[in-house]
Length: 477
Ligand code: NAD
Image 1 (spheres, rainbow, N blue to C red):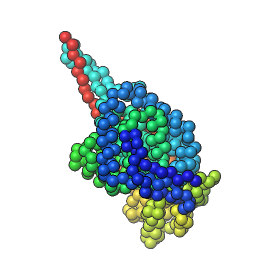
Image 2: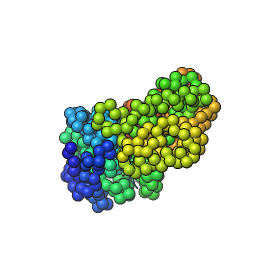
Image 3: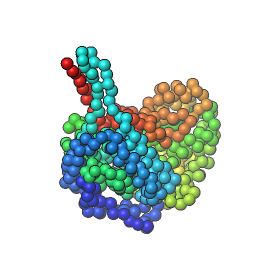
Image 4: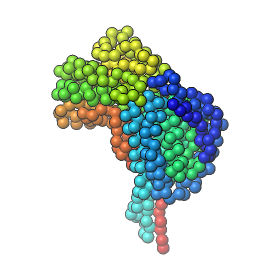
């Protein structure tokens, strides 16, 4: 299989020296890429290129900016299968999941491409004579985007598309582990007609490359998706220089299962939400809260379903769950499993030693709410099942969390579903559906330690973060 060399991309040129190796997490003989490893001066060059390119891009008619995104979607569509295979090789998720993610990136480009025709301001009646008032959305200038490895093409796409269509230039710092997926997106945009300098990409360590990007005062705003710990550092850096910041971070997403639910259906919802993408989704159903009448039947059904998720190479047919992304992530997963074991946790399924980076889906019971394994994000195929006496207690347990990203409920009662949706503290609520899986046209984001909870991503509101509103009074005599 081909090893890709992934350079930085600055002012339309490939730059930097490649040195960071990424090996396929399912196949230790497959070197997927060697990518650039940037220093602060590389970041400064990228920011300069973006700053210089921005005025001309902002003066390009919005519909023409949108056409570039539409063209990029066509290019990506033309190599859908190649991109999906590369994504599976570098991230590990199954080919079906990778195909879906690439499809999402294409659709996001089209959605925001069409926004070039209709994102605008309002015309308002003025109280002054012979005067009209209207608002304009102005781009912020140059923005920095920092993205994680778990959705390596969809997340960059859903940040880049609203940023670019609004007339901003961009410096993107992708995750170290997944540079190839971003390169495909960059190639599509370049082939789609994006002028040099409007999008610049710098690869490298978060603590060096990312910190330099956030610290550059020419970068008007930073949109970040990743862990809460890193997000908080970025927030502090941006607040110190009064820059705009958007953070989408971790989660410990509760799925409540009430007595009136069908246990097998609820188990399917939990398995898709907890083991899909190897549990490495910010919205993963990582803790299930069951009422007493369904607890045992639900756990039995979930253990049965979990057997379908026997881990394997995501490129192979029939594999529903790929490997854990890295040794580092595996250590976190195994550490949590061992912590649960030491505390008297029981394993309805899993809890077994990994085989390389292949970790069995794991369902832990017998821990009390408040144990760190039930409250801290693990980010692996590990579900803990907790007990609650009734809906009221289940909502209390769900809300007793530092996080507030996604939450779900399985019930046949409309009243219970509505009460849960009203009271649960989460940015996304799903009823009888997995906590994972979102529409691209619906606003997305969390509350509490999961988000800055100011600007939402996705949907038409996504452009709010990348623009500011100007009010114009146009008078005549
Ligand atoms: P991470 O925080 O380690 O890294 C995310 C990005 O930040 C990477 O590009 C990394 O290089 C960069 N980075 C690291 N340190 C930095 C620093 N000091 N300054 C600037 N940038 C820095 O996260 P990860 O391991 O890549 O991703 C997993 C995490 O992402 C999980 O916590 C998950 O919940 C979260 N996530 C959240 C969402 C969401 O929308 N809420 C979506 C996907 C993933």
